[in-house]
Image (cartoon, rainbow, N blue to C red; front, side):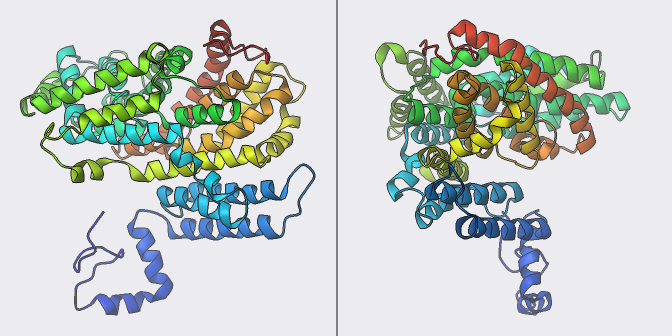
Length: 519
């Protein structure tokens, strides 16, 4: 953030100490507010429209909307909070972390559920996993271990083509996934490396297409697909696991999740084929790519003892997660054990302030609020009521058509939303309530439809990692949408034709609601 000191762009306009008051007076009360919003990179019209709509919808639903059949007063109040949160997220009217904190406040004021139930998301097992993962990720970033791992792997591979860079960066993403939760964190790590590689291209159309393919496939598609397979590498995973735990009393371990989800890695192969075909990058080479990566790696300081110890601790945590069924230590406790080991006094030479600054507290606060809201949707019956509204659209069709209809509907709704966490927190409770209505397996059905949200590839504003990728300036909205629409259709087909049969092999066929949990 830019400084608020005189002489800086603190309120969206240039000002100095002597002229600050005069400029503010010239802008007027509302003009100053608009200038402040504009200085954050947002559109004041969009922000204030969304702000007014969100609060108007909240009060209209709460005090004007009649309590219809099947919707309890608590469910209606919960609906008011859900609509408020959805509009707030879509229009980005307030920071996502503040939204997460305001959800419990509104649920208390609207008499949705008692206070202790409004904060369940913050103190749940899933909440502790997320918080521990965020702090662990901050330690990795402050130590520089993330960049060292990425450059080390890239240096050893000695790739010299567009496709080679894409495949290698996909592998690097999978290595970093257990260390860095959130696709946007990995995209941010890739940003300076990809920018450096892109500078090695020429100015021909062929070179431009090479840049586009590398940025979209590496920073967006790779980070999203890789995150689906590792429980802690993608926050929507934890939302779904938390929902199953609270509603179905089902505990999904780190290894269980990977067992179910690893075939999604095939989606990277599918999108790589399509991106390569669309941008015609099969034989596009990068002159000097290896030298650039080697220079970046050589500029790093020598590996410290602290970095080695941090890496050992992460390996210990990963082993604890993968062997949970043997030692019975829950995933969230293993993560906290890792924190205890990392914070042995004197282990590393940086303090809590550096770690605190790198921890994504805003995402954690939004995550906690979203989990609490999902839980309230189930407790008040709102999820079931919404499911009743959706049911007629897909009723009477075979299981694969039901999945296709709801997957397409998910992508239509997601066009206006930035956050995967927010979207899945809204969709998952409804999907869980829909499963018995369609006579489908609750776990397989909910996961299949919720997972498709990860492939929200139509606009770069739908995913934070895509926003980071767009900042490179290598592709336009049109480029992204043209390749993305087909990628979304491929993802829907992949879920129905590949993942649904795989779930059946694992013991949870989506078409058999009576199949017991096999793990």
